[in-house]
Length: 113
Length: 117
Image 1 (cartoon, chains in turn cyan, orange):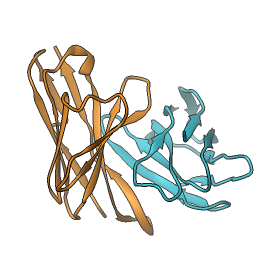
Image 2 (tube, rainbow over the protein chains, first blue to last red):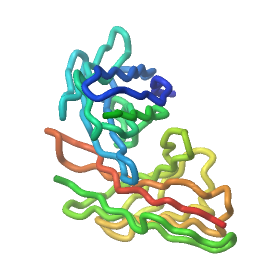
Image 3 (cartoon, rainbow over the protein chains, first blue to last red):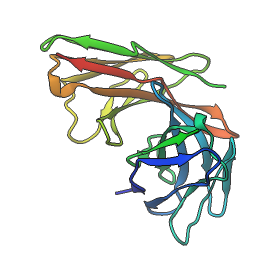
Image 4 (cartoon, helix red, strand yellow):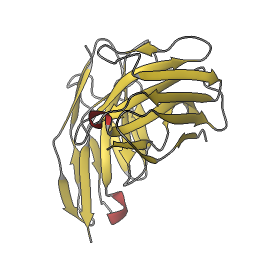
């Protein structure tokens, strides 16, 4: 079945550092890909998404490009802030499937001042 | 934008009792909602799909009689954990498809922390 593999955390960075969180997936066809963020004590919020190959999703300085050839959707941000500290989840929705999502295990990011 | 609200955010119950968690779509209608469960340091796992006006669809390995789902209206789905045990302690979160980010988007509630003592 479909699956998502995300880099293990936790990740600890200093403010203004560059962030990469790797995500690869296994799925048939062309799934839609998502990054969700979970701030402490809150639910999940959609951060960005991409629905077809070579699409780039971006939001709040975060970016991820849908790479079909490497089945990847790595999350990047050029300069992180303390407020970016959260757990980040990579997820996919199968092509032509319902709205249910398959998630990676999540990566906890801590940004220190 | 679309908002999904969950209640309660935290609940502690005694072993053997039942607890109900509500999931509401606040400004849109949802014929389908999804219930996920998250164990510590694990990913979210889909438990079931809640369908308005019909029975829920459960994922393999999820006990239907233990996790009762009722989709009472186009804006409300409830998850009832019956005869709760400490191993049911977990983070439960619901989602519903709505419009946003330029197309269909899945919105999540705030989640509910259940502790069974």
